[in-house]
Length: 268
Image (cartoon, rainbow, N blue to C red; front, side, top):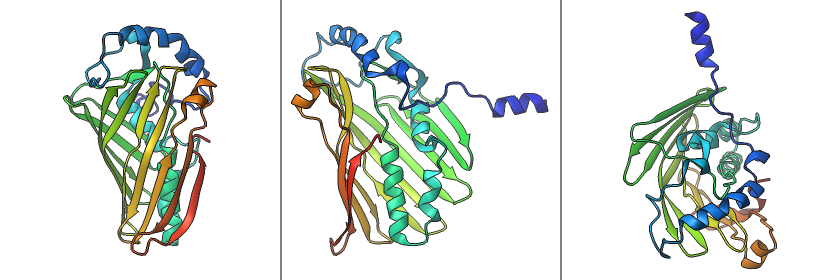
């Protein structure tokens, strides 16, 4: 019994998705994009794709719930979540929260999608001091809920979100509805976070990227951040470039005094 319990505790069904995973590269996506284009020939621009089903051969070998869990705990051995509470100064904690939020943005490959979870499906994973539980709580629309804790640093994270994809002719515009809340219980601080949009382009070259504005706010420290994820231009996509850039600022909410600039790329 003890040996069986130990095996269950260390069981890994599918390894976390890697940014350098060549199996699901943009090259792979270009090979399956023809299948997607054939599937959407009958879809009109502006149509809601919430119930649009991909064939099984275009699914990643993981559930959407597992993908959500990986966003919280999988950081190449770094405990970015714990860093949010370990810093002594409020501004340093806020910078760590912004860093963690950006790190949850993972590349999405056009034409490869996780399996849709069924109502009541759950996924649980523990990694170090981090415990993550995800559950599919609504079927129509497909709403997923997440609760994560960091036992050592007393951090509590809750999400509740769902996607509303719409077909725009040459791309799909996916709005992510819902909220993310992080609580640093030892610091008595709460951080509210918005979520960006996801744009999946088919022409002139297949690709997917996060876009739009993200706000992060902590009422207790009077600190706020605005992040802008830059959408690639038509010319850049035609050239095959994907810069995945991000820019923004950290400022005081009450005075609007800017404290830091944010710039770079969200995937590196």
